Image 1 (tube, rainbow, N blue to C red):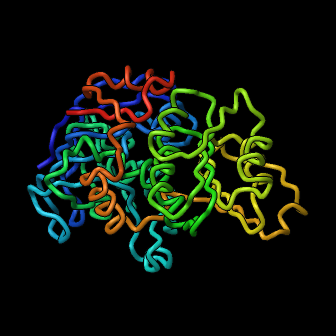
Image 2 (spheres, rainbow, N blue to C red):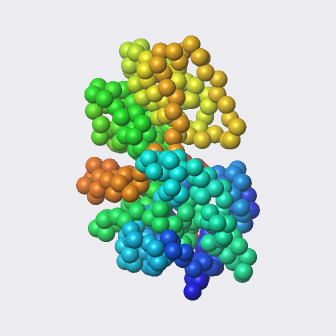
Image 3 (cartoon, rainbow, N blue to C red):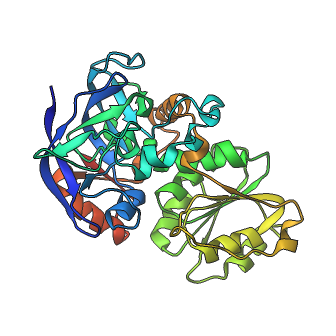
Length: 368
């Protein structure tokens, strides 16, 4: 029978989160009910809550959940009640990209995860007082004490690892790590530059420190974040508030340029500087998302040295293998994710939003 649970609802674009009782639909054959233990707060949640994306509101967001399975649909085989799970994005499982191991580029990714607010068949997963709410966000809508989750969003994880320590793996961390491991794939002696030292950028720094790259440069405008980047593996830092980025990177690389750059800021001016700072045959991975329709002017002749500009969603990760590997690295202390996390009780979600916006918290994690 349907389950009543407490959720943080966004009533309209720009409105604060408000705690409200909502009703979850019965789980379908390939869905599960998950009791949330923790969920990360991501800039994508804030972008939708502000009205910047056409997600149906009122609605329930949240897409970095971690919890315990309570019930499963009749066709679910990958998890069982009692299993610990990290929640990530969903996908159709049938298109060419899903079949090829690239579910982040699923043919129906946008409606299933970011914009639709409903299941693929158009039915609602969440209601309030008999009225459907926007839900099914990344197949989970985890800003709630319980969530109705797509089977393809569920990743079974080691029960010995505290769930609040790994909730961000579902989106931000796997994005930063995947940019380095799945796209740049640094060779011995490579130079990797990370533009922006937020949660995604610092995840990229930690990932680069686990590769044969020997020069890892973190760029930001906040000194405290650059100090943290050094502690997490950066060999050099550039404070863009005080230094010209192009000159600084030229000095660090001896004028050669960077082999790989991860752009996380969403600032098209910074992206242009990154492309210009590439070495021949270097690659910029575009992770930061400016407003829809944003364009960047590039020096076409400057690209002819084999430079590549590659867009990225969710680290191009196959979650069922990628996330458990990250969990093991967290457990063994090789991916010190706890250095990024600040925890907040679920009821304090608006304080977490304010602290994130003010730069006081790199990765807020709500606990239940």
